[in-house]
Length: 298
Image (cartoon, rainbow, N blue to C red; front, side, top):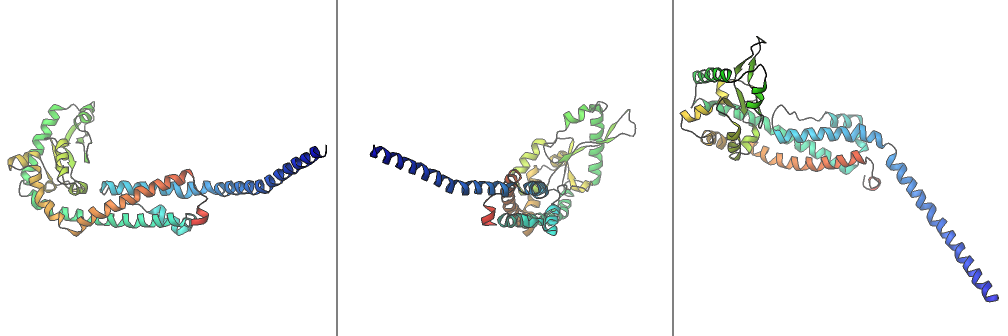
């Protein structure tokens, strides 16, 4: 009897201790869980909509800008500058702020080398083009090609244009004269454009261009100046017994010695790698704007 009482007493004591320690341990755990959810959700929506989503969008624009190297894609930093000015950028963890600063700085530096390179092309290409064609050559080829295209294509349904010219590279479709809406006519041929990226990827880019450059299409070397000494035709090369690579090679050699061209090639690669990594981290922050580790590493 006494032995059974002692066993029951020990059992009750163990149960009491178990309950006691569950309370001692459980309350802090529950408190920590409560603090975690309070921290991660308080202010998370404003972080997402006011900071991380706009930054993600702008960094994506920078990535496209660096990838394309064309003036139509403008390097943007308005969101980043505005967040700096208002002080909202301070809500971003320090490590991520440092990465943002580096991406915008290196991206801007890479973009800054593009303009001198394009200026060099503006100077070098006309000299090369004048060696193989003239304004009269351009006018004669354009007139002949426009007449041929208007004989072949019925523009009233517009389907012929899209079947004939697909944008597999930077360029523009035919210029159409619609002064008579019932009889639209082609006024100028289409054009494929040789861009900064094509100089950077030369000679591979020459092979790629030849796959999309048609005999009734210009190959153009300037994004805005629509003049004869910034474009050539396949007929020009044939008449001068040149391949596209042979025509481009002298200009490329001069460009490759240019410091801005060299810097554009190296800095762009570095900036794109940093941008890709930052974009991924911003995407994660859009999903989870606040993380517990920010309290330690901020």
